[in-house]
Amino acid sequence: MLLRCCTAFLAFWLCLAAAAGEIRLATLEYPPYSSQRLPAGGSIVELTQRAFATQGHTARVDFLPWARVRAELRNGLYQGALALWPQEIIEEHLIASRPLFYSQLGFFVRQDSPVPFATLAELRGQRVGVVRGYGYPPRLLRSGLIAEEAVDDISNLRKLAARRFDLVLLERIVGQHLIEADPALRGRLTWQEPAVARVPLFVGFTPAQAGRPDWAQIFARGLAELHSNGEYTRILQRHAGAAP
Image 1 (cartoon, one colour):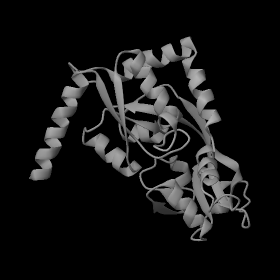
Image 2 (cartoon, helix red, strand yellow; image 1 turned 60 degrees about the horizontal axis):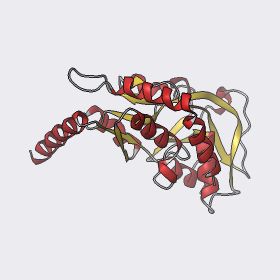
Image 3 (tube, rainbow, N blue to C red; image 1 turned 45 degrees about the horizontal axis):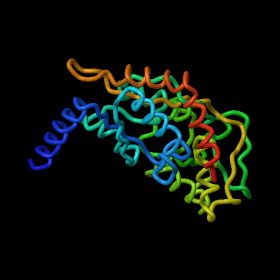
Image 4 (cartoon, rainbow, N blue to C red; image 1 turned 90 degrees about the vertical axis):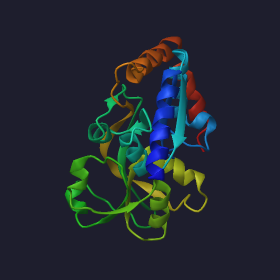
């Protein structure tokens, strides 16, 4: 009963915040796109906050485990999330922004134990580390791989280094960032060609409600302004220089 009252109060407070021009968004530790350890929270966080700022709004971004991000979206505690894959947009019934980034999705392996393959069918029966709540492309999950879940990507990479399984399914740039930032992993894990998918990353918003801001439209206008005034490119350049 107490939890229900607290949730109702928080939802009411969020409505007031939205009316005052603040949007509350959720994300995860997903460097270099989003991380509490990176300047301005990472590239996609800074782009998002600056896009809203150009329109006179404040974007508050909370960092949570990804499965909780999705649960809290359904509970109405957030008006959007970042960074999302297409399957997550579909499953959570969100309004997608234009893609902010494209990246390669594929496998990481131990350097001393490569797993060469040409097609996914060759990996049938292999144990692979995945993250709970990620919206992986359905064809990957139907390919015969044995998925073992963890709460986040760094946990999977550490399990891979400890020989708990032979593959981790992860975006290339994220995996490389995490490995380079961790001395215990650096030089031990590597990307395994080929990539199995090219995935866009979105900011996703809950559908607009009567009498409340249309955050998806506001963000689209702000993002267009960042492109036109050159700030979008400057933000990307700053974060490229901050890579480990």
